[in-house]
Length: 139
Image (cartoon, rainbow, N blue to C red):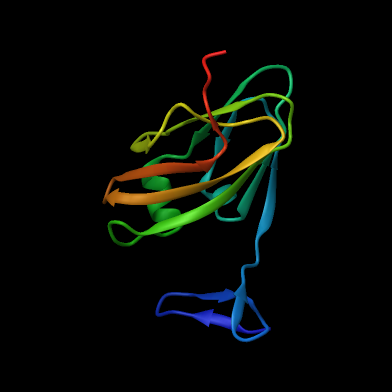
């Protein structure tokens, strides 16, 4: 098992084939209809949200917590999280204090998934992009 080293941290990884690095991710299982995505959960890399009983909302942690907890040390740095909705209801995203959702109409649809990209836009602000999922059809 190799590791990727930077000036700040060492991240476990596995080299496969000709130098390909494989991420080591952990699943955080979220079983509430409405969830708060805390930075400790986001750092695991995969959020598995089981929605039942009605449409849900996933609210991010605050920008201050995300910036400090990842950490994002400079503007425009980003990190990604895989978000899987294995429930039977759609999930809408909302931003915690200082977090802007790039497209508030984008949903994590039932039995679907999307990629969440968090970008530090200033020392106290983060923007979240949702890639995949589906737009709100106004149902």
